[in-house]
Image 1 (tube, rainbow, N blue to C red):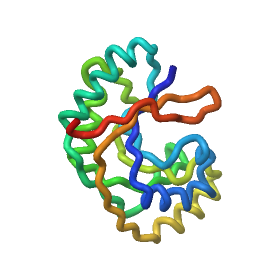
Image 2 (cartoon, rainbow, N blue to C red):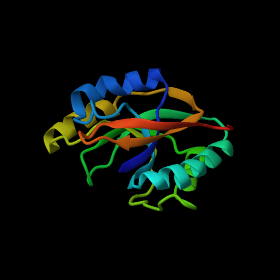
Image 3 (cartoon, rainbow, N blue to C red):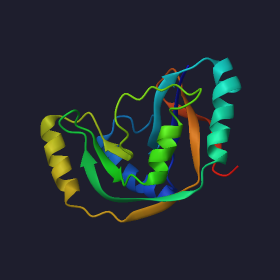
Image 4 (tube, rainbow, N blue to C red):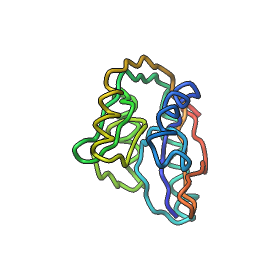
Length: 170
């Protein structure tokens, strides 16, 4: 089965992201706004129960809640026409990402870690230029606290569901 690990921001930030995702993200219905802290990976049920969940509990126990903030939009252009809310890469979120690629967890890092919340993707070049140009002019001042992360699994229809939540310090 396919799994991933993400942080779901508080409702206020999800509402802000969804105000754009409804129009510009074809994956809007598949998963709520999130920060991917570990890219999707394949694992057997026995691995999840016997190795991965105990490791995620250990990581969560040794992690402290932290604040993150978003001040602007950015994009992965020219690689893809993806636009996102840029999460300022704090030491804590970078450290969390690194811990999720060590030990028994698959080291499946394909790209450098760029903490973000996708708000638009799979846009045509023309649409990307228009939408990104408009969004770049906006100022964001969003700050919230993260105190947990979620192990997700992907269903056959492409939607993602929470398998288990791990609270920091527990």
